[in-house]
Amino acid sequence: MGETSGIMERRAPVVIVGAGPAGLTAAYELTKRGLSPIVLERSNKVGGLARTEEYKGYRFDIGGHRFYTKVKEIDRMWRDMLKEEFLRVPRLSRIYYKGKFFHYPLNFLNTLSNLGLMESAWSFFSYVKARIKPIEQEESFEHWVTNRFGKRLYHTFFQTYTEKVWGIPCNQIHAEWAAQRIKGLSLTSAVSNSLFKTNGSKSLIEEFNYPVLGPGMMWEYFQRAIERKGAEVYFQAEVVTLKRRDSRIESIVVRQEGKEIEVIGENYISSMPINELIFKIEPPPPSEVLTAARSLKYRAFILVGLLINRQQMGDDNWLYIHTPTVKVGRIQNFKNWSAAMVADANKTSLGMEYFCDEGDELWTKSDAELIAFAKQELVELGLASVEEIEDGVVVRQPKAYPVYDEDYRQHLQTLQDYLATLDNIQTIGRNGMHRYNNQDHSMLTAILAVKNLFGEKHNLWEVNTERSYYEEFQTNGHKTNGLKK
Image (cartoon, rainbow, N blue to C red; front, side):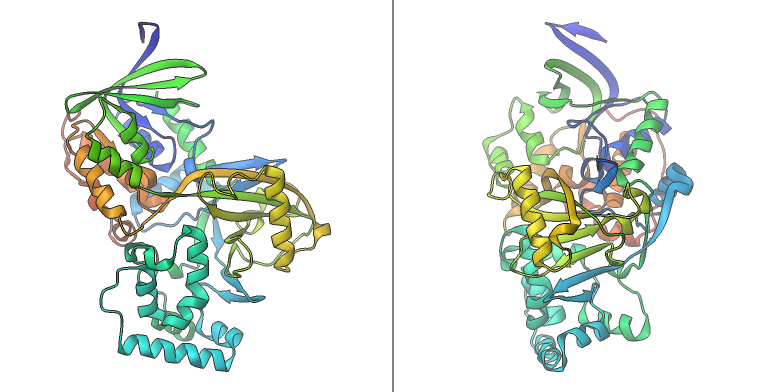
């Protein structure tokens, strides 16, 4: 510890930006190897997108975070961390459309019953047409889903919700997003699962794990674990500058409580949004790199938590709202994730989820306006009465979803190529890699980033969601002494 030109100094072998699932996993892996990293977190709590917010004893999950993985090392890590406080929860997620509940993933018999014979027949003919003459080049989300469900089911069950989430037409969303998030799901697999109880798709998981007090509980336990082993977590530490000399990052300057601190490390791991990272580097990257960083897009997220004076509101963990006349995209019922999320067992807490852009009409509404708006929509949907809705709270989350638009891949490649010229920094996690991935995938990139510091050579950009679900992750890789310089 020292002080130069009035700026306080801190030193660590590895400096980590972000205390979400990726950043904390990296810190945890480093402490297992005897190193004490410094973790810099901009907010006042750990968990990032997977944190848990609390209001009057009611806990709110920012988006609904299932804990499910086929990466054995990560599954073991979760269980070792929480033990008996790691619940096994049955999954029920449905689509709410025209006042009816459709199972999701689509259940053939349920869908047939709700649509009726005539609409079901038209949907079947649309599917047959798509199979006979599929779209040859699947360039967009619309193409990908239409080829697997037909145009009619695409319009009914995919278009409205997806466009609420992304704020752009489905024909402008890259097909890669669908392939990554709902790979293996089709009308054929839905029928097979309904009739024969097969379960071949990752989207058909019927149970998942969940911390008794919400996902933030997991990351609070990770924080305690790393601090017991000497790691330090700095909260409300906003990154001001990454100082670069030639091909190396020499330090990170952060602002905390009005003071600047220079954090010096040998190596750096970042889970902050990759475009923000680029803008913080000094001397700055070339102009084409800055242009690419400006071109990456994100969707923001607003959770309006409503407290309902009703003991039970169905068995759903969450509902997808396909009704086009309301803006709410998804509704979480936190009591059905864990009873401990609700302070009063005679009441229910709902999370009304809105997807928007920072600075747009929805984002700039006051908290009071948003609560009133969410109440109105819940009543309009027929899911609660005005008298039952007792209170509300608003949580805003910027940069919640990296957008896979038509041009994102070339912009991201430009950033990847530039970062590859820097010897001692790696980016990990959802925002650090601009990838719409799950917690376990973010954790996997962190685990491999740490292995790279000890001589292994993993290309983190080649790690994809498919691997995190289907490959058995090998943990007995070779080890070398010392950190990579």
